[in-house]
Each structure stands twice: as C-alpha cells, then as structure tokens.
Length: 114
Length: 114
Image 1 (spheres, rainbow over the protein chains, first blue to last red):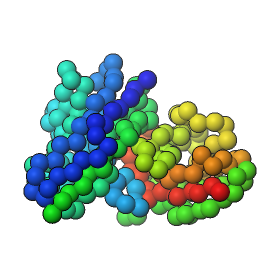
Image 2: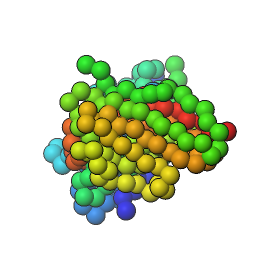
Image 3: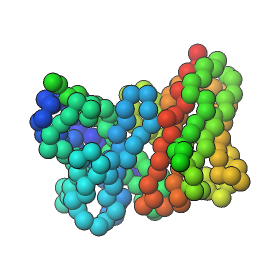
Image 4: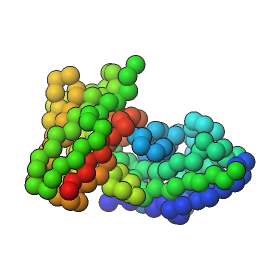
C-alpha cells in the first residue's frame, strides 16, 4: 500500500526565510503527488500537484515542489515566508490504480515568526 | 460559482446514535469523496461515489455508509457512533474518478461524539 511520510510535525521559520517542508512517499509506480494547505477551521486547498510532467512543479502563493524519483521525495519550498503562510500543510499521494483515492501524510504545522 | 458545501458545520451526538452529513459538490463535478480527519492527523479516505455508486472504499467499517443522488450531492451516514468517530469529516469533489483530477475540499463537518 502507498504511504506518505512528512518529516517534522512542526516547522518554525522567520518571516522572509526559506520554507522547506519534507515529504517522502512509497510507490512502486510513478504516482500523482499533491500538496494541500489547511488554515484553521477550513478545508484543504490545493497548492500544487505532480502528474508526471515537469519534475519541478510551481503552485500558488509562490510555493513549488520538486519530484525526485531516486529519493522518492516531493519536498515543498518557498523562497521567502510570509506571516500568512502559517498553516497546516499536507502531502498526499494517489493510491495505485489511479482511482482518485488520496493517501495523506500526518501534516506539518508551519509557524512563521515576525 | 459556489465551491463544495457541507452541512451541518458542527454536530454533537451521543454514543450509539446515528448521524447523517451532507455534501454538495462544486458545480460541474460528478465525483464525491469523503475523508475523516482526526485531531492532529491527516485526512483518511472513507469512500468515493461516482454515478450514484460507491466506487472505492477505505479501511472503514460498515457502520460508515453513503449515498449519491442524481444531482451528484452526497450523504455520509455513520451508525452506532463511537467516541473514536469524533473528527472533522471532509467532502471533496472532482470532475471524475481519476487521481489526476483535482479534488476540491469543503470546509468540513466537525462531529463530536460524547
């Protein structure tokens, strides 16, 4: 079965600093990969997705992620953090079989300090 | 264009009771998936409905059941509620069943079982 591991349940950065949120997946076939953001008391919003096109994927709000098959990783980055980026971030992988079932990681809480 | 809507926003039930949660998908979407998000955890896939049939199911007991109506809206029913069923229940809609299609999430229904 597919699985997703997000390294670090809490990440704290200063405003203006680089944001790096780590995600590793287990998959025997190239999967679809997603990053979602969840603000307090809200649903999930898609930041970006990898669907086997370019390995560097650009998303909304200045975020991007790089698919590295050799490392089975899909880390999320943003060059300069804003206070508004403080939220919960989830990495997700599609289940094998292209069924639409998503498997989520445990999430990483991003704190942005002024 | 309204996004995914869910009702009610919050719900408090007693152990052993039954509950029904409702979801209206984004306009034009025909596939609805349900996820359970326990506190501090990532969402877990419950099931997916397409063409009024359950197409995929996660590792949830038969106490969890659903329905999709001809207008693509959906219900999630949980019988014989347990304390462990307390969670945020998220509905997501998409254009189709495949993993490549973006899933749009609603704000969720917060269920508390006492």
